[in-house]
Length: 160
Ligand SMILES: CC(C)(COP(=O)(O)OP(=O)(O)OC[C@H]1O[C@@H](n2cnc3c(N)ncnc32)[C@H](O)[C@@H]1OP(=O)(O)O)[C@@H](O)C(=O)NCCC(=O)NCCS
Image (tube, rainbow, N blue to C red; front, side):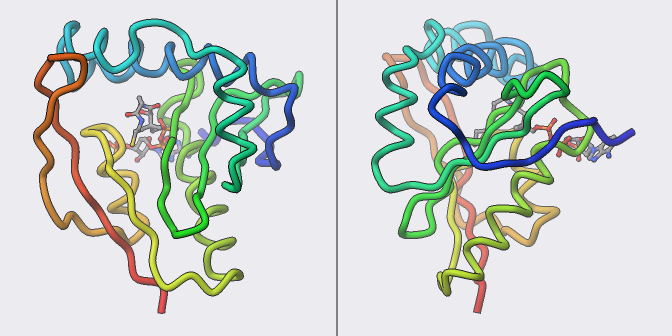
């Protein structure tokens, strides 16, 4: 069933919800593919709303999926060079095509802007979502976060 959410541009008053859902997504969903130690290194605590505000104001575009109370339950962002930085969905809204709809929005905007390509470093959970939208893995990335080994996938989709 498709979730009853509306995709809309981010507003500054979304920052507290986004800060919390980032943490909830990593610990509620990320744990399906990553260990507790990896999830703790990835998101040791909820983000600070000021960090969300600052990131959203650095020139990127951010879109949220809002529930019936207009609260952000998922979000995605697109940097000016075509980099998709964050894609996070609250566990209560997972598996209902919400990330997919956010990604469709980003692809549409990127095409409208004439960007040649989109690229991302996708988690194990995000990889199938990006693959369904035409992204291909270019490399597996093994690295450390806060001293803990973790991996994701460099993925790219040409738009021209
Ligand atoms: C990755 C993430 C954002 C995906 O969010 P999501 O909203 O659950 O993604 P979708 O619902 O679009 O797709 C997930 C699954 O739901 C299924 N789905 C899609 N549309 C659906 C619908 N209308 N109804 C039911 N299921 C649906 C998809 O087939 C998909 O299944 P699959 O993974 O087995 O292929 C989420 O898991 C998350 O926040 N993970 C933790 C943080 C993370 O890894 N972020 C990515 C960093 S790059």
